Image (cartoon, rainbow, N blue to C red):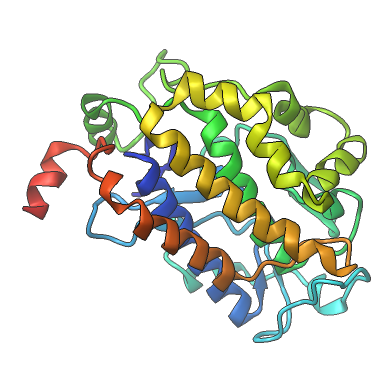
Length: 296
């Protein structure tokens, strides 16, 4: 059993989980598998603070590519090696959780060149370009970005403890969890409007020189932080989003028309953030007390 992301203990817990999933995806790339459906629903968190904190799950859309040969960031034509379905046994290559019961967001499955969960798909994939491992890495960025709009902090410890006791199955008739929030229209449109209509504006955010500033100063993020997250986390969250967005924006300025951030670059940003803001990790964590006591 693994924790769905919505049962996160705190921001640091989620960031560690994202880091673990990135490491898993890096391994998949090295052995020649392309996941193609990176989303919050396909990332799971570890049960215990002393475990690896993040896992990549759900390999329904993965395909084979040449092992140890990452697809090029500038590639636009389909490769025969990328169109072969993965063997059914690929789930054994990584620690693999059971498939999530229900996906909350729309999923595109209409061609081998456009696969994934719409809000997390890069603009170039929405426009029909070949899906590469760089696009999966960019989808991790959208998971990070949309996380802060999805929740108003973690659930209380008592609720998290109860969820653990139920194996993280929702209680009948419970509805949405109390900390879940609707996305602002700008981001809700990513999953509700026609993909080719949304792709240009989504691409502008990444390709624009001022994209990171537009995000940081935009009313969506300002209202999100004001309404959903404690004041002392506002600067750390802004810092994390700024550094990751800048990395993707800078990587797209080489004339390729798409971002090309590597696993190592992304993981390094997360590691640096975790180190710089380590003092807040346990101050702002709702890790259940029965796990905290095991760490003493």
